[in-house]
Length: 163
Ligand code: GDP
Ligand code: MG
Image 1 (cartoon, helix red, strand yellow):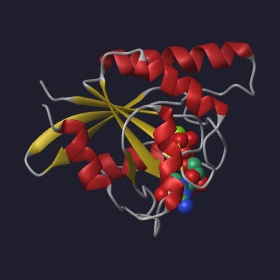
Image 2 (tube, protein in one colour; image 1 turned 90 degrees about the horizontal axis):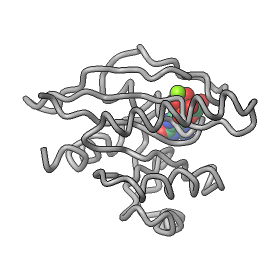
Image 3 (cartoon, protein in one colour; image 1 turned 180 degrees about the horizontal axis):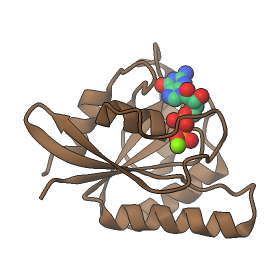
């Protein structure tokens, strides 16, 4: 069985961009519109000779009707349930939001390996801004840039480490 990595996080943090990097596909919809990728989305990833599956999710969208909020939260729960490891994506440029805290609370309650990826961190590997993300209680923030392809390999290695 290939290990499964779920990408979760609020809209617009760069999950679909990361999905495309990890799967080297253009399949996920990447957009400036928050929450456009509403369906779960599966792709094949490879790291050296190790193969894995990546799930993209739409995340939570609290500004929309409660129907969509519930549906997206359900998709995230389903993706996490299917996953061996979860990559929780946050945005160093947008900073922490209430949604990030809500997702973190949920992920802390789930007995799964969770890696905290701080995206949009191109040129910010040593930035003091990264320290803020410790307060999510998910562990060490891992700076990445999905758009620029930085930190993706070590992030993937960390996610797959026990598998
Ligand atoms: P999603 O809603 O979490 O799936 O986010 P998307 O992957 O659709 O990306 C949302 C926006 O963030 C898009 O405009 C992306 O181009 C942008 N973005 C994604 N990754 C990065 C990154 O590493 N750096 C910067 N500066 N922008 C990024
Ligand atoms: Mg998306």
